[in-house]
Length: 133
Figure 1 (spheres, helix red, strand yellow):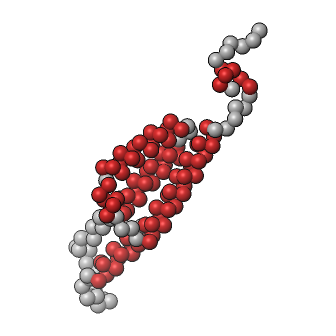
Figure 2 (cartoon, rainbow, N blue to C red):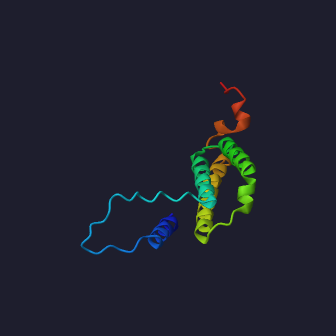
Figure 3 (tube, one colour):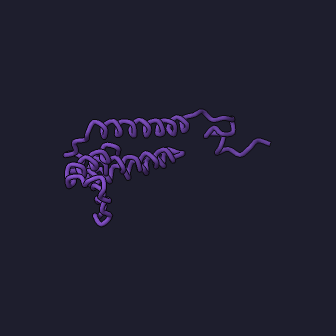
């Protein structure tokens, strides 16, 4: 994001009029520079971040499956954009960070779902049987 802001400032600075004398007050009539549109890479990163938030909010494997399906559907709809994407080094680093965080959350959910039952009553074969008198 800093790169985009810095680039915007650089472009704005290169297109400025020659500086006014120190005694002249700056003109407030000039409109503010509109924000630069997000690049396709920035848009993909924002979407990846949204998916990471959803994955990290999951508490069970079925939730992960729903998010995976949503990600797959989105990726299929945006396949051409993703295929043609040429991320900057900063975007690639951010994507790696998001992926690592998403993997950590995913692993926590799958590990928790594979944890052994905490009591004998939690065993699946015991759950179907009525309690003994």
